[in-house]
Amino acid sequence: MSSEENQPNSAPSNVASTQVSAEETAERRSFKGLSVRIVSGVVYVGLFIGCILAGTIPTALFIALLSGLCAHEFFQMVRRDGKVPNEVIGDVAAVLFPLAALGDSVLLTVVIFLFMLAIGLWYVYTPRARIADVSATLMGPIYTGFMLSSIVLLRDALPGLAGPILTIGVCASLWVSDSFAYLVGKAFGKHKMAPRISPKKTWEGFAGGIAGSVIVWLILVLTGLFTFDALFAILCGALVAVLGVFGDLIESRIKRGVGVKDSGNLIPGHGGMLDRCDSLIFGCITAQLLLYLGGVL
Image (tube, rainbow, N blue to C red; front, side, top):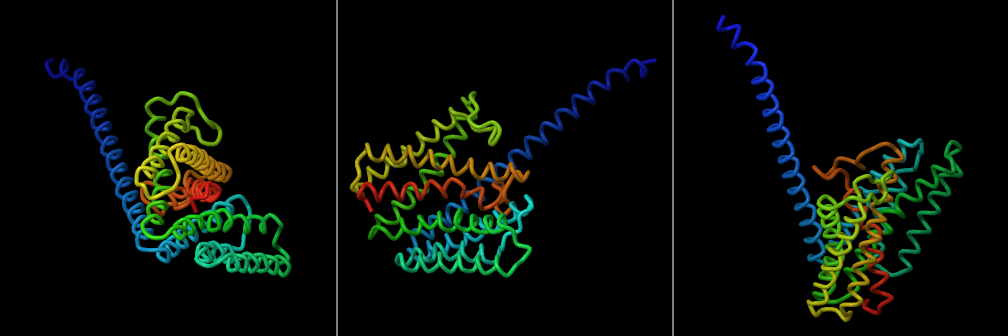
């Protein structure tokens, strides 16, 4: 009789125990995932900054590697959309663009000419190649290597300590912008920015991201290494952050269009290399142009 009376009470206890165990497992997985994300992010940023500090040539080699990986991931995604790009031509061009930034404009012109010539010859002598395949092959290295070449140009633009500090500052403004956008959006985000393309982005996070970028640019002013003032720094910080978000949305649009969550799985906790570089692609070249127009470079 007593065993029958105790039996009904054991079920809720078992259910509660199972729920607690499931919650603990989820918390452990979440903590482990966050730890992996932090470690891989620190390694990535450390290598990035280390190459910039090491000199222009290490910077160009590192950006060339990043560009090649980004182009490869881009081509893998467009293949899911039924396009058949020439990955050999595209990957080689993506790698050559940052290396060409070490030379003068003639070298860059040569790379562009050879790139277009190679694509043209491939299209002419490959009957099954479609114009959509040509377009995908063109976009890959332009979207990645050519745009990321601005980092090499920034590193090479100013002598002494100013060059690496400026380059690190520009990249850091985009990294900090991403972090601020995430934190502010998570804490205060209510108004969706582009729900069909990137559901987690909010206008509140967007504003936080701009603030984060501006802070970094103001720190660059405080170093005393550069000729621009606080007002110009605020302008640059805001525009660079805006274009960085635009670059993020472009990559999100590509991923959503082909039905993938990440561009790859190269970086644990972060996805692919293109996922890490999406904001740099448009943000860094924006910074380079603004600094050139402002007479800083």
